[in-house]
Image (cartoon, rainbow, N blue to C red; front, side, top):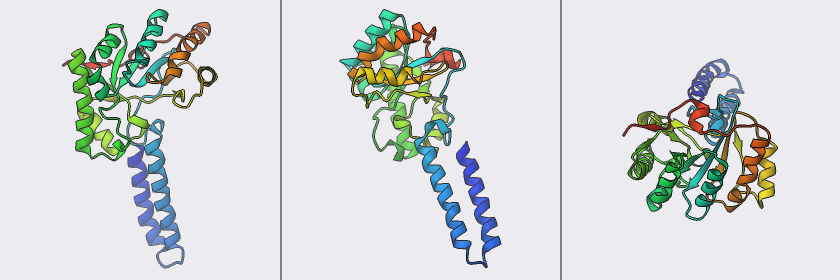
Length: 256
């Protein structure tokens, strides 16, 4: 990963510059700049999942179609509305579910699956401090979400999306151990900030390109309001909407 490269370069630079400038008045400044570079790179990499700094995530498809993905559900009010639109339009999507909600609404989880959509892991707790979890606690959290999905569907998900798109070295270790694939996005809809459906529609259609993995949320009324128009735009532009597993050529589940 890029983190290992940056760490190695920074360490080598510290040693070389330390020797080269030790007897000059610039050694502290130069070493300080190297440390700042390392910290800035690491901070940027933590919050930019598309940088693949700590974890190799998939952000785009390899086919000339797009995938719609929904985070933070299932929601008892919004998810059924979204499922109804998807069913009416014959579109399959991927739902990155929160384990706590999956346990609370197993029937909704089964409906998502029975209607041909993919169910994936978005952590159990979606804790705002999950980026600071220890490796053990992070592993427990992701495993707990998998267990909630298995309990409802009898399937173990392969796809995982980090909450808030934040990653760190512990994610890399945990995902490797669980044999899971990190999934990012290439188009963020910002439906969590949209004031109305027209703002959301404009944001998506003005940026949508083939191969995009679109990030949406199925706990936002504005998303349900806009979904039909987003799908119709794709149809009108002859952009096929396919399941995530199809556009990235990866199986979404492991045998239990």
